Amino acid sequence: MWVAYALLSAFFAALVAIFAKIGIKGVDSDLATAIRTVIILFIAWGIVFFKGSYSTMGSITRHSWLFLVLSGAATGMSWLFYFRALQLGKVSQVAPIDKLSVALALILSYFILGEHMSLKETIGALLVIAGTLVLAL
Image (tube, rainbow, N blue to C red; front, side, top):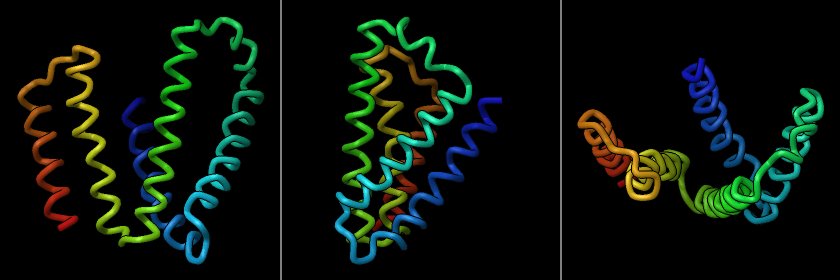
């Protein structure tokens, strides 16, 4: 089931680039990111309330809160830089560079989480990097 969710994530991420490139014409990229964030906020909290997940908020540990906040901050910074890059560059160049996050996540997971990369994952990360260079340059 996770594969279906991952594919849907990739599809909607692709739409983000297309819709954002169209929407940011003549709009400050930081303002565009803020508008987008408000929409995401309403959708995410709407789902939480619809599912009733809000009732478990009290059980979230301080450790989880810390890393959820850090994740949110990293997301915000990523979006701010992504929208600015889209405003200045072509989707065909910005999107592949943004997807370097795949290889970077594998590398960081090794150093931070202690996850070992198999030969297959190492080759895949190298291919993502090579593909990014081919597409972006």
